[in-house]
Length: 249
Image (tube, rainbow, N blue to C red; front, side, top):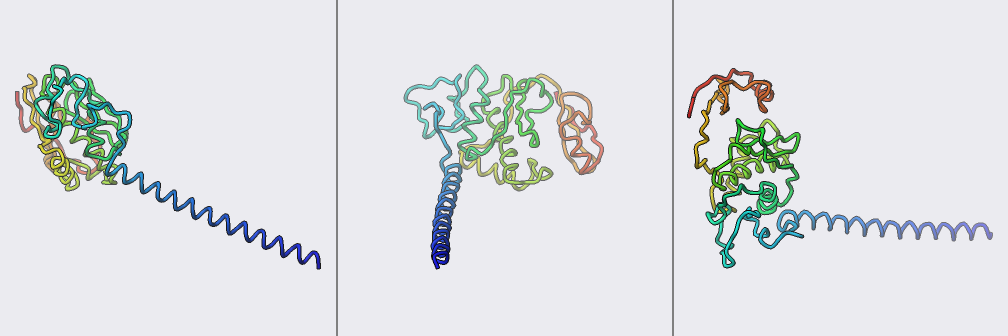
């Protein structure tokens, strides 16, 4: 009889402990879900701005080399404001951080390089390697707005990578890319398709694929080959031959 009572008491104790454990797990799951939702909302609507210098919190791409008057009107300024022009080239990494917060919710985790080796293209985004390269020589002596436009367009490609847009579609003429360009331009209050303001002093060779019409502008009179970043992808998807169509000085 005593064994029966002891077993019954043990059974009730175990049942009570299981009930308490289930309640704890439910509470933890609810809190975890709320925290994840809070983080998503924070990233989307109010990305973290902790430890950011006051001048940079406007997220206009203002970097250390820019000197502004104390009464500068940040509210009505755009990312290509003439007041941001400076003799020294902008800090690409700082500019990237600000634009990432302003336009993309801070989700882009790519590395940014001011490349001295990239000479035949203004920029290049390696999606698989998660790196954005901005040509240092091509942007030399150009106005700041040219760098701004180049960086933002490459950041859009990186952003689309996070949106699971297939690599084959992630190009400048795809619908997703054009939609993002319009969104960014609406937020920025200006166009991000900014033409170079000064000639490079070097000839430009424009090659065009005879099958798909894809263009490639190069600084050397040589059709794209396996050393060209997008050549392998083009070979798989098209396989057409590139022919020289335009030579510009």
